Length: 151
Image 1 (tube, helix red, strand yellow):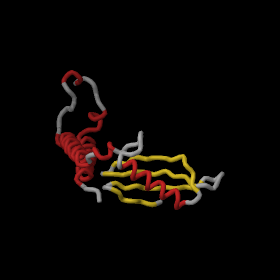
Image 2: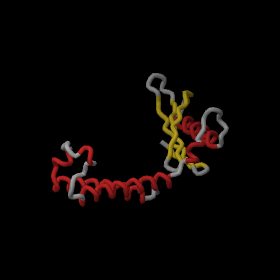
Image 3: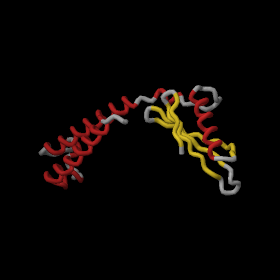
Image 4: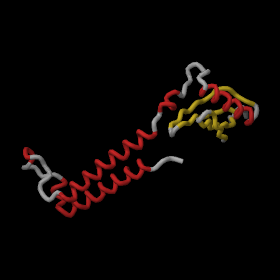
């Protein structure tokens, strides 16, 4: 397995030998900004080195947009910053929900449903606080995951 860097992309070559013919073929992946696109060639090669060379060559052509039908344009548009922001925002909302569960001492149901008994009501105050604590921890996990940057 070999990784080649080209124009901000990583081409990860995975040549493998076929059992029946003992020839080599490849699968490869082009990665950029945390996104990835797998590709497979049906071509066969005599050596592993030949298969790897073809993989990196075709990978470069795909990145340059010179292979009809194969593209990595969606990887160029991938915005990891937006993904991190969504993690942080959803984490904050989940933390808020957890605090509502912890601090809310009265009935959690809207008025029309006041006659039914829900699972949250059966938990009691201690159970609701424990559930709220778990929800807060889950939300904090999302905030931390969204705040971290990939190397």
